[in-house]
Image (cartoon, rainbow, N blue to C red; front, side):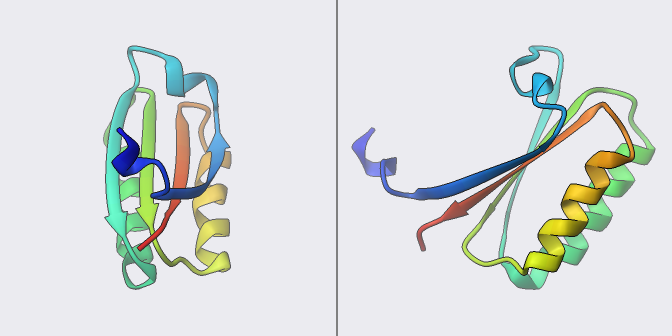
Length: 91
């Protein structure tokens, strides 16, 4: 798997870290750039409003604004059943 070795440059984890390894958590991944963060935030919020499961959201991006990272982090303060991982990828 050396092909993927240098693709993930950095990752940030927000929310309940225990959910990442919990086998009952639902994992949803998004591949976005800075232009799609608002839509992704709306989608995550909607999923949380209509779902009581433990959720782990994986966001893969090559560009994201710091204020959008703060918004994703803020979402994790509203519930203890969510974790958001932002992966910064090498384009």
